Image (cartoon, rainbow, N blue to C red; front, side):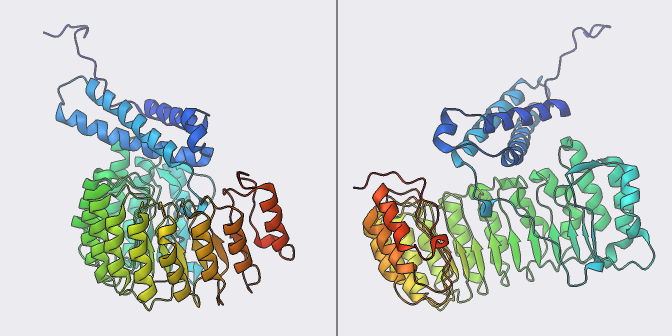
Length: 507
């Protein structure tokens, strides 16, 4: 029996307060930016990148812990707290091991542009900030003016609480019939989960039934709850051309929900699902969305923790995307098998111009299959990135043949962080001697290359018109080898990248 003073009332440890969640985010940021045993091996993150990763880590841990609590709602929440701590620690280690992402791999929110900027209403400028009801009324006044021509809105970078969301939803519902583009990325930053979900639901109801071609829901840490909160909006869209779900905590359940809710993707041309927790099961769901999008031109599913099964499913789905121009699958854990499967699709993709396949663990088997497919295809390939795939000299001939076959169109080649060594670099160098119409960047950094391999690469590119950069840093060049490189580029020193991280083992 409960005491009248409440002393015998059980104390609930879950859910944590908003302040407690913020404290964890701050602690994760500190851990990601403070030197440690792991950071000495993998490197430190910048504060800006650590802050973004910390929010995603905390959000993912919160979702996992909440799911645990739902299984035992009568408990005091101890097991949920344990999951919260364990999951955040695990994800933090994964981020440290991943290291800082190159700038081109980091999240870039596509701009909502139009030839007539008078039709774009954008409040995203300046620092990320919370927005209150009175400020919302003032900022959104132009949307209430009779006869306004706004067809595209961008609310990104402003965190809406419930009062501000009420104001915004009321205004949006009055103009939804004229909207064709909506950017709601990063609109609930650092809000408690229940409030964030309700805000998303309010925006969804307000814009439901609009005829959008562009929709951006990135950076909202959606999870399945968030995706379903936007359910009314998603279910009402039949003409989407661009859909962005980057850094949105898309678990396998959330990915499945996306595919269930979107009614038709026949017109979809751009689909970006980057920096999520999708995994194999989620990728299998996404593959169905891809398979039903025959007009897809630009597909990004990078940094999504997809393994071999999910990779094969995505690769098979791409068979139907015959007008694909840009494919970005970087930073997953595919292995060789998805590479072999993907090669079958690439052999028939004559429109592909940009191919980003770095950090997929393709190894020689997957690499050779892809290189052979590209060599035989009629595609006008401009960018080929296959960094960090454990590629050795055994795949060098296939890569060289592919490069030679695309010499009239290739602009950038990135084979960094592999194991090509001198033997592979010399083979690639011989291929680069040919006349290339547009080649401007070659990156074979961190490949165990010594003087002979570096010399072959340098002499192959130094005289090329329009060439901009050879990156052979992080290799095994001696002091004399470095001087040799500088001598080769003495008339064009800016073409040679920095050489300060070479380990002078060569003699």
